[in-house]
Length: 368
Ligand code: NAD
Image (cartoon, rainbow, N blue to C red; front, side, top):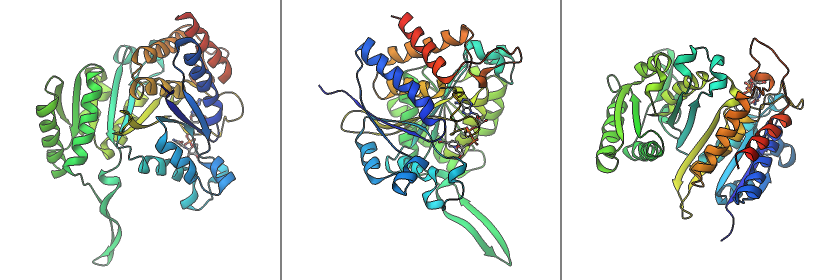
């Protein structure tokens, strides 16, 4: 059998710096755990624009469609700020998400014990936190028609439309239930069924999918505004939160900040399961290209490495090795290793991107 394929699009700014550490981790799993991948590298964002005049070349798009999973670093930077909207670095990322039809966005909020004091909430509220937000990514208010700014009775009106079909709700609900089965087996679905018809339909479809195929998973419903309050009051009550594009945008950022630094946050965007039995999948850190620190060896590679851990779990069914990698990172942090973004008020000497990679590889060696 041939090895599974990974397309690496490191992108711009700190993207290539953090991705270099991910490549070392990938090589470690090949050498030490017999998990070999066929890795190919290509360009996205500003780097692709510099070479091809477009933020995502058609050949790269074709490779992404064919790969078993795509790992992306980050795109953008001041050099590209004045480009026409159609060729901005972010358009490369949007094209990948759109053409791969990545409708299910997974954003974990996991609080490593060693970093619990970084949260703006009290340690006992966040220590041990491990929740997953599943956000619908390809429909809802950001895509619904009609949209625009129109003239009406002599003044301008801004319009966006919250629109969901049953099929769109059905497929993302299934993705959340499947995920819950691999975790704490609980889904809390959030909408505003009290004031929005789209919310009523959302609740009905989620309930029907649950009843038909996932009755073993515990399902609850919550209004999204209450969900926001509960996330900062008692976040550990949740396992998987399922929500739409707009509410998910806000709730996932809120949940992310429970855990401290941007340099720690991975994500996955999944689409339909293909002939290879795997979902179309793009894994990327939540952070951007961090032009303020790029090229200085200061970037924290953990968000990108944790994104690879998600790939191991959700694309390649290697949950045990995903946990091995997450545990190695936890050990490194408990041992006091910190990149600059993780320095607390107590100070200390930050380590470099490569030194963080060294420490994680050493912890992986120790796990054997
Ligand atoms: P950013 O996430 O790049 O940086 C925000 C702050 O967090 C900066 O101070 C940065 O130094 C710090 N930071 C981010 N990641 C870090 C890491 N791994 N280690 C240590 N510190 C880290 O957001 P921004 O400054 O608003 O945007 C910079 C560029 O990135 C812009 O061009 C923006 O469009 C782009 N961007 C891209 C993505 C993406 O590729 N998915 C996401 C957000 C922003």
